[in-house]
Amino acid sequence: MQSQQPHQASFSSTPSVPTRKRGPFVTALVLGLVLGGAGVGAAWALAGGTSDAGSSARGDARGACDALAGVHESKLSAKGPSGEQSLYRFAGAFDLATAAAAGDSSYEPLARAVSRAVNRHRQVFQVDARVKKELAKARSICADL
Image (cartoon, rainbow, N blue to C red):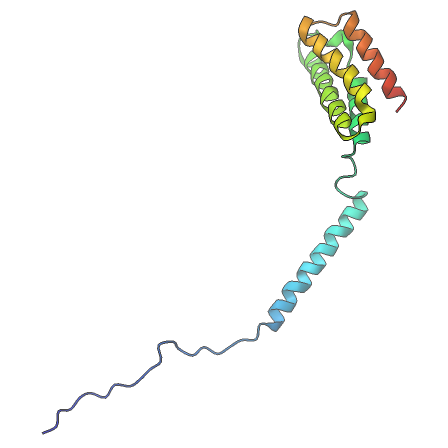
C-alpha cells in the first residue's frame, strides 16, 4: 500500500505585486522642486537682493555709527530703561565696529575709538573726558563714512 501524502502546492515566498510606473511621480516631484526654487528666487529678488546684502564690513560700520547716534552720554549712567537702552546701543556699536574692522582693515580707526570709549566707561562707570573724547573721535569717523 502506498502512503498518501497530502499534495503541497509550491508557492513563491514573495507575492507578485503589480508594478506601478513611477515616472509621473518623479516628474511631479522634480517639477515641484524647480517651481519652489523659482518662487524663492523671485521672493529674494523682490525683497531687494541676496540674504548677505547687509553683512558687508561697510554695513557693519554703518550699523555701528547708527548705534552711536543713539548713545547719549547723559543717559549712559542713568538708571532705568533709558540708561539700559543707551548701554546696549553702546555695546552694539562696539560689536559692529569690531566686526567691520575684522572684515576690512580700513575700519580699524572706528573700532579703536569705540573700543577705547567702551573700555574706559567700563573702568570708571561714568562718562568722563576720555570717554567723551573717544566718542567724539568715533562720531567724526562716522561722519566721513
